[in-house]
Amino acid sequence: MRRASAVGTLLLGGLMLAAGTASAQAWLPPKGEAALGLGWARTWADHHIGYDGVGGNPGDMTWNNAVSDLSYGITDRLAVRLNIPFVMSQYVGPKPHPARPGKPALDTGAWNSAFTDFRAEVRFKATTGALAVTPVVAIVFPSHWYESMGHSAFGNNAVEGQFGVSVGRLLDPVLPNAYLQARYLYAVPEEWAGIRPTRSSAAFDLGYFVTGSLTVSVLGAYTKTHAGWRAPVDFPPATNPNFYNHDRLTKHEYFRFGGGASYALTGSIEVGLNYYATLWARSDINMSGIALSVTYGFSPAQVIKRNKGVQ
Image (cartoon, rainbow, N blue to C red; front, side, top):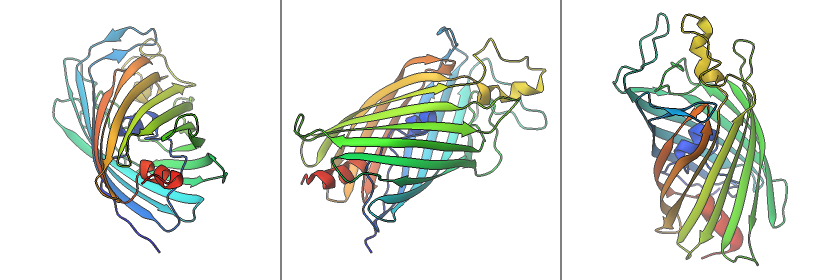
């Protein structure tokens, strides 16, 4: 049985928080190959964007995300994955959210930290030809209770199911040494105040092998929440108990775009740098992010290169 360990971020950790996916990952690790990933990403924002596209500046929001990620190829066509972020967040500004009754305030200007949600995923590669079609089923569940209401909230503190598919293909012979993969996920979270804020998320990854060691990529993610409250016009007053669910029930919609590069130092060690920004949003924030990674074992680019035979 082949085994490998890894140190690195999930590609675009900010996109993972925002869209539930870091990269499309249509290709799977080989049978018997495991990877343990540890990494860091930083995301930030200074504007809320209303449902009408008009922005407001309540202050500065920053998140540092340390991610632990374990994946394993059960067969060449079936893989499992489990990850959990440790989030450190801070809000500095004149408009903090009020504290939940009986709980400490989150938006105090100090740094706060917590483990957030486990995410367990199963992927199955349904095809064997040039086009990789890989259905995915995942469940997200909180590691413990944590505050979900505030400018610097760690997450939604919610259980949700995710269902989707990834599709990928090498672009030979039209564009040699390039690949394109994309993923669609439909998320079904818990219900609050009689509303279940289901959402659709799509992400793409267009990559090119400049050399056998250097890969550059362009990435994007779009998310649309299908039910919920338009920000801020549909929010209840702070005296209403449902006000403390307004972050969970906001009807987010956004498109985020970025790119990056990775370099294979050896056959099993790869370093990478990625950046993204929000190009368009409604009922959301103008989030941007940067991710640094060092991977030992396999990365998505390495798996694709193996399929292509790039040395």
